[in-house]
Structure formats: C-alpha cells, structure tokens
Image (tube, rainbow, N blue to C red; front, side, top):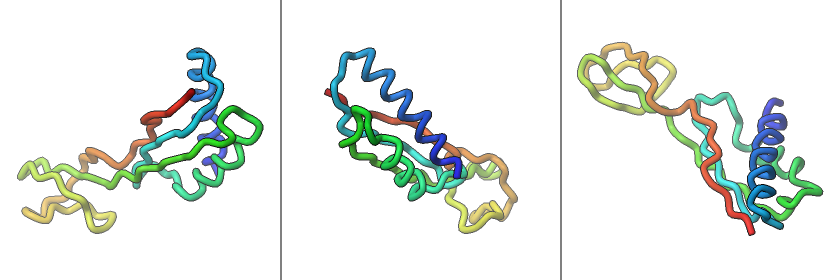
Length: 113
C-alpha cells in the first residue's frame, strides 16, 4: 500500500511549511486525486489517520477531491469523460490518447494556525 508513503511525504511537506510559518496546529489539508493516479482515496484517508498521530496535525481534517478523467480528441477537438478504458470519442469515434486530467495527485491547500 503505497498510500502510506505518499501520505508520509505529503505530511512532511505540510509540517515543514507549518514550521516555517511558525504554526502550532494544522486544521485541514486538501488534496486532489485523479482517477488515473493509481491512488485509492479511501486508503489515502486511512493512511492520513495513521501518520498524523503525535504531530501538530493530529486533529486535522483531510479533504480529498476526486478528479475525473478528461480525454481530448485531436480530430474533432472535443474534451470528454470516457465511459471505459478505451478512449474513443463520442462525437467522431476516433481513438484518443491525450489525457488532459485525471492523473493528478496534488496538495491543493491547508489551514494552519
């Protein structure tokens, strides 16, 4: 389960920033997780509950925004959400390869005090 190491790294970034700002507590952390990121949001949330123990984030809330897959059709310029793992354009039926969103794993924001 690589979500634990991902959350450890995320928490390290947050703690370093909080320390630099002189914060005493982290209230919440918001992440964006793409549907194709290879990360399971539920496992990430579980890992968060484990890694925050004993830190200034131990009472923090984690918000995870799931980002859907958006694919771009080069032929007709349509951006669409595919219905399965074969990315054929619903307008022109062209097979598409350009994924515009859905792979992200981003630390979006945090609230510290």
